[in-house]
Image 1 (tube, rainbow, N blue to C red):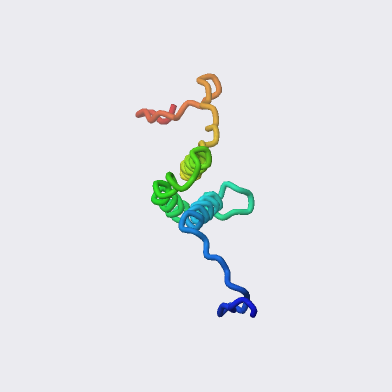
Image 2 (spheres, rainbow, N blue to C red):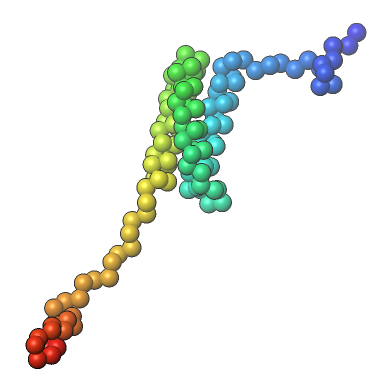
Amino acid sequence: MSEPEQPGGGPEERLPTAAEALLSSVHLLITIGFEATGLRPGSSRDLAECQRAIDGVRALMPLLEGALPADAYREYRQALADLQMAYAEAVTPPPAAEAAPEPSAETAERPKIWTPRGDV
């Protein structure tokens, strides 16, 4: 006898565990978030999408805490912190270009002053 076939046509496929699905979701959201900052060459900036990704990761992190070893959990916490810093960098306006230096008193042209006899 052969293995039972699933609607997909192949042998029975194993579903991921809830922990695996959560981990996969967090990993995907972090990737989407970084891409949406627009900081990577070739990526497009969508700060609303980045914010949704951050919110999603933040919501899922407590569920991962008990499902992952402590060192792996810390790595995902660090990835979230890095994503939040990238978002902050993306929303911060670039520094203004240096303004032209103020003309010195010696080089500045004096404005004309109106007087009853005419401009001076």
